[in-house]
Length: 142
Image (tube, rainbow, N blue to C red; front, side):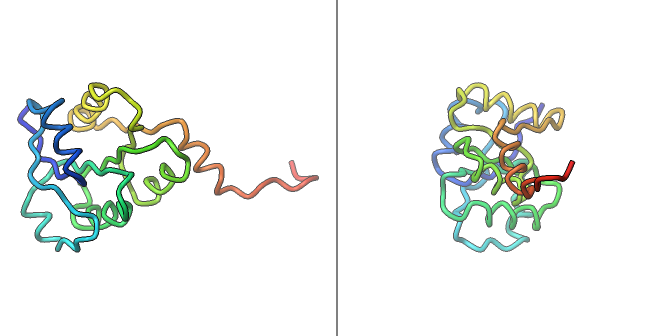
């Protein structure tokens, strides 16, 4: 597999990929969440994967903008396994979400699998996030 072109949402994520997955990924740009990147700027970079830090401010908006610019781009978020954060990722159209508590080598392996065979990864808290949107049952309803 040729090295996958990646845009990342923080310098820390760029360092992570350069340390744990340099043979598989090449970081083509570190994106700043508050910068309004033009769709043509993103398309010119030709990324195949975007990896965002779910602990940075305004990252769901950045995820949405990336998906609008390149609908086939696989956007992945890495952050706390918190139902609110995971729910925000789901609503932003993120392809996969990795808990920041996972070992780095497993996240790197998961990113590679997303690119090779289009797997999708979500933590258990996605269930809590989705169920929280369902109104509670009323008594007498079955």
